[in-house]
Amino acid sequence: MPELPEVEVVRRGLARWVSGRTVEAASVLHLRSVRRHLAGPEDFSAALKGAEIGEAHRRGKYLWLPLTEQHSLVAHLGMSGQLLVQPATAPTETHLRVRLTFADSAGTDLRFVDQRTFGGLSVHEVVPGAEDGLPAVLAHIARDPLDDAFDEDAFHTALRRKRTTIKRALLDQSLISGVGNIYADEALWRTRLHYERPTATMTRPRTAELVTHIREVMGDALAAGGTSFDSLYVNVNGESGYFDRSLDAYGREDEPCRRCGTPIRRRPWMNRSSYFCPRCQPVPRTAS
DNA sequence: CCCCTCACCTGTCAGC
DNA sequence: TGCTGACAGGTGAGGG
Image (tube, rainbow, N blue to C red):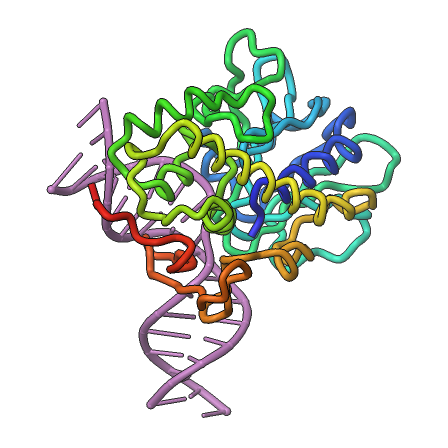
Protein backbone atom coordinates (compact mmCIF):
# COMPACT_ATOMS: atom_id res chain seq x y z
CA MET A 1 0.00 0.00 0.00
CA PRO A 2 1.58 3.24 -1.12
CA GLU A 3 2.27 5.76 1.64
CA LEU A 4 4.01 9.06 1.31
CA PRO A 5 7.51 7.74 0.49
CA GLU A 6 6.17 5.54 -2.27
CA VAL A 7 4.09 8.39 -3.67
CA GLU A 8 7.19 10.59 -3.68
CA VAL A 9 9.00 7.93 -5.71
CA VAL A 10 6.13 8.05 -8.20
CA ARG A 11 6.30 11.85 -8.33
CA ARG A 12 9.98 11.70 -9.24
CA GLY A 13 9.24 9.16 -11.92
CA LEU A 14 6.49 11.32 -13.40
CA ALA A 15 8.81 14.34 -13.35
CA ARG A 16 11.38 12.40 -15.30
CA TRP A 17 9.27 10.44 -17.75
CA VAL A 18 6.03 12.39 -18.24
CA SER A 19 6.47 16.12 -17.57
CA GLY A 20 6.88 18.15 -20.75
CA ARG A 21 5.09 15.65 -22.98
CA THR A 22 1.88 16.41 -24.87
CA VAL A 23 -1.13 14.14 -24.42
CA GLU A 24 -2.44 12.57 -27.60
CA ALA A 25 -5.42 10.77 -26.04
CA ALA A 26 -6.77 9.55 -22.71
CA SER A 27 -8.75 6.30 -22.59
CA VAL A 28 -10.93 5.49 -19.61
CA LEU A 29 -11.27 1.73 -19.21
CA HIS A 30 -13.03 1.72 -15.83
CA LEU A 31 -15.61 4.32 -14.82
CA ARG A 32 -14.92 4.13 -11.10
CA SER A 33 -11.32 5.25 -11.60
CA VAL A 34 -12.52 8.67 -12.83
CA ARG A 35 -15.48 9.00 -10.43
CA ARG A 36 -14.00 12.14 -8.88
CA HIS A 37 -14.14 13.79 -12.29
CA LEU A 38 -17.77 14.81 -11.86
CA ALA A 39 -18.31 15.92 -15.46
CA GLY A 40 -17.83 12.34 -16.64
CA PRO A 41 -15.30 10.28 -18.60
CA GLU A 42 -15.79 12.04 -21.95
CA ASP A 43 -15.10 15.40 -20.34
CA PHE A 44 -12.07 13.90 -18.59
CA SER A 45 -10.59 12.71 -21.87
CA ALA A 46 -11.37 16.01 -23.58
CA ALA A 47 -9.62 17.96 -20.81
CA LEU A 48 -6.46 15.91 -21.33
CA LYS A 49 -6.36 15.72 -25.11
CA GLY A 50 -3.64 18.00 -26.47
CA ALA A 51 -2.52 19.24 -23.04
CA GLU A 52 1.15 19.67 -22.26
CA ILE A 53 1.98 18.07 -18.92
CA GLY A 54 3.66 20.39 -16.42
CA GLU A 55 5.83 19.76 -13.38
CA ALA A 56 4.90 16.88 -11.06
CA HIS A 57 3.77 17.95 -7.58
CA ARG A 58 2.77 16.13 -4.42
CA ARG A 59 1.03 17.00 -1.18
CA GLY A 60 0.68 14.11 1.22
CA LYS A 61 -0.45 11.17 -0.87
CA TYR A 62 -1.96 13.29 -3.64
CA LEU A 63 -0.14 13.93 -6.90
CA TRP A 64 -0.98 16.55 -9.49
CA LEU A 65 0.26 17.56 -12.92
CA PRO A 66 -0.65 21.03 -14.28
CA LEU A 67 -2.29 20.87 -17.72
CA THR A 68 -3.13 24.52 -18.33
CA GLU A 69 -3.08 27.72 -16.27
CA GLN A 70 -6.52 26.78 -14.93
CA HIS A 71 -6.53 22.99 -14.74
CA SER A 72 -4.47 20.20 -13.21
CA LEU A 73 -4.65 16.43 -13.39
CA VAL A 74 -4.98 14.94 -9.90
CA ALA A 75 -3.94 11.39 -9.09
CA HIS A 76 -4.48 9.38 -5.93
CA LEU A 77 -3.19 5.82 -5.76
CA GLY A 78 -5.60 4.68 -3.06
CA MET A 79 -4.77 1.24 -1.75
CA SER A 80 -3.50 -0.47 -4.83
CA GLY A 81 -2.93 2.12 -7.54
CA GLN A 82 0.16 2.24 -9.75
CA LEU A 83 1.27 4.73 -12.39
CA LEU A 84 3.41 2.95 -14.93
CA VAL A 85 5.32 4.29 -17.91
CA GLN A 86 5.29 1.39 -20.31
CA PRO A 87 6.30 0.69 -23.89
CA ALA A 88 3.14 1.29 -25.89
CA THR A 89 3.43 -2.27 -27.15
CA ALA A 90 3.52 -3.86 -23.68
CA PRO A 91 0.61 -6.19 -22.93
CA THR A 92 -2.44 -4.71 -21.21
CA GLU A 93 -2.41 -5.19 -17.44
CA THR A 94 -5.32 -7.04 -15.85
CA HIS A 95 -6.33 -4.00 -13.81
CA LEU A 96 -5.50 -1.27 -16.32
CA ARG A 97 -8.04 1.53 -15.69
CA VAL A 98 -6.83 4.59 -17.62
CA ARG A 99 -4.24 4.98 -20.37
CA LEU A 100 -2.65 8.17 -21.67
CA THR A 101 -0.85 8.19 -25.00
CA PHE A 102 1.52 10.95 -26.06
CA ALA A 103 2.13 12.92 -29.23
CA ASP A 104 5.84 12.18 -29.44
CA SER A 105 8.11 9.42 -30.62
CA ALA A 106 9.25 8.11 -27.21
CA GLY A 107 7.14 5.01 -27.71
CA THR A 108 5.80 4.91 -24.15
CA ASP A 109 2.42 5.51 -22.56
CA LEU A 110 1.27 6.27 -19.01
CA ARG A 111 -0.95 3.67 -17.38
CA PHE A 112 -3.06 3.89 -14.25
CA VAL A 113 -3.38 0.34 -12.94
CA ASP A 114 -5.51 -0.21 -9.84
CA GLN A 115 -6.82 -3.54 -8.63
CA ARG A 116 -9.18 -2.26 -5.95
CA THR A 117 -10.21 1.05 -7.51
CA PHE A 118 -9.89 3.11 -4.33
CA GLY A 119 -7.65 5.47 -6.23
CA GLY A 120 -8.38 7.52 -9.30
CA LEU A 121 -7.61 10.33 -11.73
CA SER A 122 -9.52 13.57 -12.26
CA VAL A 123 -9.04 17.05 -13.70
CA HIS A 124 -9.77 20.02 -11.44
CA GLU A 125 -9.65 23.78 -11.36
CA VAL A 126 -6.55 25.38 -9.93
CA VAL A 127 -6.59 27.70 -6.91
CA PRO A 128 -6.58 31.14 -8.56
CA GLY A 129 -3.05 32.48 -8.70
CA ALA A 130 -1.41 29.29 -7.42
CA GLU A 131 1.89 29.09 -9.30
CA ASP A 132 2.29 25.37 -8.69
CA GLY A 133 -1.14 24.61 -10.14
CA LEU A 134 -2.52 23.43 -6.79
CA PRO A 135 -6.03 22.10 -7.43
CA ALA A 136 -8.70 23.76 -5.28
CA VAL A 137 -9.98 20.36 -4.17
CA LEU A 138 -6.63 19.76 -2.43
CA ALA A 139 -6.44 23.10 -0.63
CA HIS A 140 -7.67 21.58 2.65
CA ILE A 141 -4.88 18.98 2.73
CA ALA A 142 -2.21 19.96 5.26
CA ARG A 143 1.45 20.06 4.33
CA ASP A 144 3.29 16.87 5.05
CA PRO A 145 6.19 16.68 7.51
CA LEU A 146 8.76 16.39 4.70
CA ASP A 147 7.55 19.70 3.24
CA ASP A 148 9.65 22.75 4.19
CA ALA A 149 6.38 24.65 4.69
CA PHE A 150 5.09 22.18 7.29
CA ASP A 151 4.10 24.28 10.33
CA GLU A 152 4.94 22.41 13.50
CA ASP A 153 3.56 25.15 15.77
CA ALA A 154 0.23 25.08 13.98
CA PHE A 155 0.18 21.28 14.19
CA HIS A 156 0.79 21.37 17.93
CA THR A 157 -1.86 24.04 18.48
CA ALA A 158 -4.36 21.97 16.50
CA LEU A 159 -3.54 18.87 18.57
CA ARG A 160 -4.11 20.76 21.82
CA ARG A 161 -7.44 22.06 20.58
CA LYS A 162 -8.80 18.71 19.42
CA ARG A 163 -10.68 16.36 21.69
CA THR A 164 -9.52 13.18 20.08
CA THR A 165 -6.68 10.67 20.33
CA ILE A 166 -3.24 10.88 18.82
CA LYS A 167 -3.50 8.20 16.14
CA ARG A 168 -6.78 9.56 14.83
CA ALA A 169 -5.11 12.96 14.61
CA LEU A 170 -2.14 11.53 12.70
CA LEU A 171 -4.52 10.12 10.10
CA ASP A 172 -6.44 13.41 9.79
CA GLN A 173 -5.12 14.89 6.58
CA SER A 174 -6.25 18.40 7.49
CA LEU A 175 -3.78 18.39 10.42
CA ILE A 176 -0.84 16.55 8.90
CA SER A 177 -0.80 14.70 5.60
CA GLY A 178 0.94 11.64 4.28
CA VAL A 179 0.80 9.53 7.45
CA GLY A 180 -1.04 6.24 7.03
CA ASN A 181 -1.76 3.37 9.40
CA ILE A 182 1.70 1.84 9.07
CA TYR A 183 3.79 4.96 9.66
CA ALA A 184 1.47 6.14 12.42
CA ASP A 185 2.16 2.94 14.38
CA GLU A 186 5.89 3.16 13.63
CA ALA A 187 6.20 6.80 14.69
CA LEU A 188 4.16 6.20 17.87
CA TRP A 189 6.39 3.24 18.75
CA ARG A 190 9.52 5.35 18.25
CA THR A 191 8.04 8.12 20.42
CA ARG A 192 6.79 5.62 23.06
CA LEU A 193 3.27 6.99 22.78
CA HIS A 194 0.13 4.88 23.07
CA TYR A 195 -2.25 5.33 20.12
CA GLU A 196 -5.08 6.39 22.45
CA ARG A 197 -3.17 9.22 24.09
CA PRO A 198 -5.53 12.23 24.17
CA THR A 199 -4.15 14.92 21.85
CA ALA A 200 -5.03 17.59 24.44
CA THR A 201 -2.35 16.17 26.76
CA MET A 202 0.46 16.56 24.23
CA THR A 203 3.24 18.91 25.32
CA ARG A 204 5.26 21.00 22.91
CA PRO A 205 8.43 18.87 23.31
CA ARG A 206 6.42 15.67 22.90
CA THR A 207 4.90 16.94 19.66
CA ALA A 208 8.35 17.92 18.43
CA GLU A 209 9.63 14.44 19.23
CA LEU A 210 6.72 12.83 17.40
CA VAL A 211 7.20 14.97 14.29
CA THR A 212 10.91 14.15 14.29
CA HIS A 213 10.13 10.44 14.40
CA ILE A 214 7.58 10.73 11.61
CA ARG A 215 10.22 12.43 9.48
CA GLU A 216 12.77 9.76 10.31
CA VAL A 217 10.54 6.80 9.56
CA MET A 218 9.45 8.36 6.27
CA GLY A 219 13.00 9.33 5.40
CA ASP A 220 14.19 5.79 6.06
CA ALA A 221 11.46 4.41 3.83
CA LEU A 222 12.23 6.89 1.07
CA ALA A 223 15.89 5.95 1.19
CA ALA A 224 15.04 2.25 1.02
CA GLY A 225 12.38 2.53 -1.69
CA GLY A 226 13.77 5.41 -3.67
CA THR A 227 16.17 3.47 -5.81
CA SER A 228 13.79 2.01 -8.37
CA PHE A 229 12.51 5.20 -9.98
CA ASP A 230 15.59 5.54 -12.13
CA SER A 231 14.19 3.16 -14.68
CA LEU A 232 11.56 3.06 -17.34
CA TYR A 233 8.97 2.21 -14.73
CA VAL A 234 7.27 4.74 -12.51
CA ASN A 235 6.92 2.04 -9.97
CA VAL A 236 4.84 1.69 -6.89
CA ASN A 237 4.07 -1.48 -5.16
CA GLY A 238 3.67 -2.07 -1.46
CA GLU A 239 6.45 -4.63 -1.49
CA SER A 240 9.27 -2.15 -1.08
CA GLY A 241 12.18 -3.67 0.76
CA TYR A 242 11.64 -1.25 3.60
CA PHE A 243 8.51 -3.05 4.71
CA ASP A 244 10.28 -6.35 4.96
CA ARG A 245 13.26 -5.16 6.96
CA SER A 246 12.66 -2.06 8.98
CA LEU A 247 9.29 -2.12 10.69
CA ASP A 248 9.40 -2.12 14.50
CA ALA A 249 5.70 -2.35 15.36
CA TYR A 250 3.38 -2.75 12.37
CA GLY A 251 2.59 -6.37 11.57
CA ARG A 252 4.75 -7.73 14.41
CA GLU A 253 2.06 -9.17 16.69
CA ASP A 254 3.57 -11.52 19.32
CA GLU A 255 7.11 -10.75 18.15
CA PRO A 256 9.48 -9.21 20.72
CA CYS A 257 9.72 -5.43 20.95
CA ARG A 258 13.15 -4.45 19.62
CA ARG A 259 13.67 -2.20 22.67
CA CYS A 260 12.46 -4.26 25.61
CA GLY A 261 11.56 -7.73 24.36
CA THR A 262 7.90 -7.57 25.41
CA PRO A 263 5.63 -9.15 22.76
CA ILE A 264 4.07 -6.58 20.44
CA ARG A 265 0.29 -6.52 20.68
CA ARG A 266 -2.35 -5.98 18.04
CA ARG A 267 -5.68 -4.32 18.78
CA PRO A 268 -8.64 -3.89 16.43
CA TRP A 269 -8.98 -0.19 15.78
CA MET A 270 -11.31 1.64 13.41
CA ASN A 271 -11.81 -1.41 11.18
CA ARG A 272 -8.03 -1.87 11.00
CA SER A 273 -5.30 -2.74 13.49
CA SER A 274 -3.01 -0.91 15.86
CA TYR A 275 0.31 -2.50 16.81
CA PHE A 276 2.13 -1.33 19.94
CA CYS A 277 4.44 -2.40 22.74
CA PRO A 278 2.43 -2.62 25.97
CA ARG A 279 5.50 -1.83 28.05
CA CYS A 280 7.10 1.01 26.05
CA GLN A 281 3.73 2.47 25.10
CA PRO A 282 1.53 2.10 28.20
CA VAL A 283 -2.18 2.92 28.09
CA PRO A 284 -2.69 6.53 29.19
CA ARG A 285 -4.00 6.80 32.75
CA THR A 286 -6.92 9.01 31.75
CA ALA A 287 -9.07 8.46 28.71
CA SER A 288 -10.22 12.03 28.45
C1' DC B 1 -19.16 22.73 14.32
C1' DC B 2 -16.91 18.69 15.94
C1' DC B 3 -16.19 13.94 16.22
C1' DC B 4 -16.99 9.21 14.91
C1' DT B 5 -18.58 5.27 12.07
C1' DC B 6 -18.90 3.06 7.97
C1' DA B 7 -19.19 2.19 2.80
C1' DC B 8 -16.42 1.69 -0.95
C1' DC B 9 -13.44 -2.28 -3.50
C1' DT B 10 -10.99 -6.98 -4.62
C1' DG B 11 -7.60 -10.49 -3.70
C1' DT B 12 -5.62 -13.58 -0.26
C1' DC B 13 -5.70 -16.69 3.31
C1' DA B 14 -7.22 -19.23 7.49
C1' DG B 15 -10.64 -22.23 9.03
C1' DC B 16 -14.27 -25.45 8.47
C1' DT C 1 -12.09 -29.13 -2.75
C1' DG C 2 -14.94 -25.37 -2.11
C1' DC C 3 -17.15 -22.11 0.61
C1' DT C 4 -17.27 -18.29 4.14
C1' DG C 5 -15.56 -14.60 6.57
C1' DA C 6 -11.73 -11.74 8.22
C1' DC C 7 -8.53 -8.67 6.72
C1' DA C 8 -5.84 -5.18 4.20
C1' DG C 9 -6.84 0.65 4.67
C1' DG C 10 -7.38 6.00 2.50
C1' DT C 11 -11.09 8.90 1.92
C1' DG C 12 -15.29 11.32 2.50
C1' DA C 13 -20.34 11.16 3.20
C1' DG C 14 -23.48 11.18 6.66
C1' DG C 15 -25.09 10.53 11.45
C1' DG C 16 -25.05 11.84 16.28
